[in-house]
Amino acid sequence: MHTLIDPAILFFVFGVFAGLIKSNLEIPAPISRFLSLYLLMALGLKGGFALAQSGLTAQVATGLGLAVALAVVVPIASYLLLSRFIPRFDAAAVAATYGSVSAVTFITATAYLDAQGIAYGGHMAAAMALMESPAIILAVLMANALRRSQAAAPVAVRIAGGGTLALGGGQGGPGFSLSKVLHESFTDGAQLLLLGAMAVGLLTGEAGQQAMQPFAGDLFKGMLAFFLLDMGLSAARNLPGLRNQPPLLIAYGLLAPPVHAGLALLLAQAVGLPLGDTVLLMVLAASASYIAVPAVVRYAIPEANPSLYVGLSLGLTFPLNILVGITCYTQVAAWALG
Image (cartoon, rainbow, N blue to C red):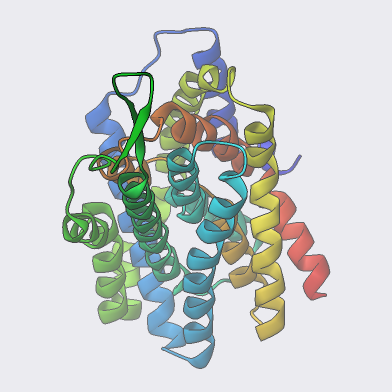
């Protein structure tokens, strides 16, 4: 319950409530975009300042390596599971969504750790950036493989006399450039801002931290609360999209986050990551992208149903992680690490 009495989380709950009762409360899109960029910039600065103090160590490299490993394992495992009970293009899109990360969930987790007095490494912001692209790339490769298999499959065509003739399959989906998808993934403005702000924080160190404290520190909690209000409204708008989804898919949206977090915990425990880094790695593994991945997947995998992967991630998994997940992951990690 501690998370629920946090002002930022309560604003998220209020946003969900306002959306469900169909209030005309609305955050203009330019303001929402500004809040998102502010939070990423502040997070990057905080991470850079922390890295300036700790330096680039073996622990930093280990944390980043685990993040990349999870970003590869999770989408592959998700696709293998989901393709058993939903169409394969949809499975690839959902796997990309859950294999990538939610920046807002991560930012909320860092605010929670700060409130609890739990230290974490600044490099975890870089881990978040690294985990965004692998799932997108893997999903694109899966979709291309599906298109090739469909194109190679014979098509039965009726001929005069009642017989059939087997012909080669069609071309299988619109043409698209993998290089363009990769370019969009690695040069996304939000991701570049995060890494650029981290570089500024690393270069300026303690002097920069003192100069930017009113911007990156004092304003952070209020801006996060405002942004979570907007996210609550968005989550409420996406809830109706879950009504007609298969029960097994709803179960996946509820169970995948703790399972992925558990995998991250086992890996972190095996290499001896500290508590704060472990919690953030669990949060990253448990989160699902609802901005970056859908934007690319709509273009890269047009055969997939957007209401499925966006509704599942934003309408179900995001509220689950924000309301109870972050607290539970922290408590489980504290227990497991002693």
